[in-house]
Amino acid sequence: MLKGRLGLEKARIPHADRHGLLWLSRGELCVIDGCLHFVRGKDSLTPGIDQIPHQSVSMILLGPGSSVTHDALRLLARHGTLLAAVGEDGVRSYTAPPLLPDRSDVARRQAELWGNQRRRISVARHMYALRLGEYLPHRDLDTLRGIEGSRVKAMYGLMANKYGITWKGRHYDRANPNAADIPNQAINHAATAVQAAAAIAVQALAALPPLGFIHEDSGQSFVLDIADLYRDNITLGIAFTAAKQAEKSAEPVDRLVRREAAMVFRKQGVIPSMIDSIHTVLRMDEVQHGAGDNSHT
Image 1 (cartoon, one colour):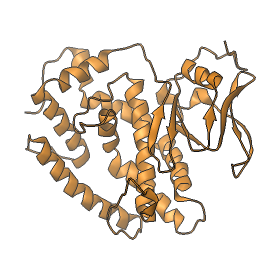
Image 2 (cartoon, one colour):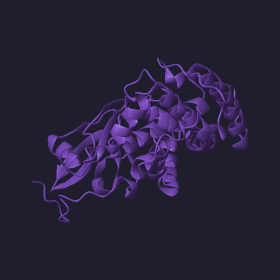
Image 3 (cartoon, helix red, strand yellow):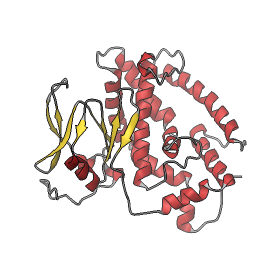
């Protein structure tokens, strides 16, 4: 057993009380004297050794040029801390170890709602209402997606104007994400950070990532559903703040986004808010109080 220095080898801090995300790259995540450390090698701009507060972080995002030892994985698993490997383009490609809370109520409720077509559409309409500020009368998912798409397009312009960003439209090439302009690159990186936060919230409640109500084809569909609830204020706010900073900074935009995301997540309590949002969209209060189906019809 890895005892550590503080005698907290079996302690688990609730994810609602943790700091969110920690971004690391070009080094080795390992255990030294029972504590988690990140050894930044010669490929890093700032070689050295940092102690990582794994007990107070929800997820560590490990970037290119990095490795992780078996002892580090064991320590992270013991404390329920997620580890995600991310590429240069901000695409999360691997996650381990998973959070395994001892509960099934949220998963059972999610499966119940997802398995009933009428109730599934009701949840999707509720999600759109949370984003758009009103319940749309439509019950066809494709129609709802189309309405949302047009409003999102307008929101990009409004938010860019608010932050003083020159906006030329949303452009993203998965094969070459760095070909986009700075605002679009910033949105890509911010979206990855917010999706990672949503993954923490989903797994912290033992919800089922593949069972999305709006997104359908991804193994992280429900994660994407929750992340989208925070696109307008959180994702775009982080992205355009970083894009504005990039106009006067020599730092890469991805680093500016990470710094801004870490500050916003902690200051605004994004992960706890996402956990509350999951309870809201799944109407967990109905389960707790034994209420019937009060969905919008």
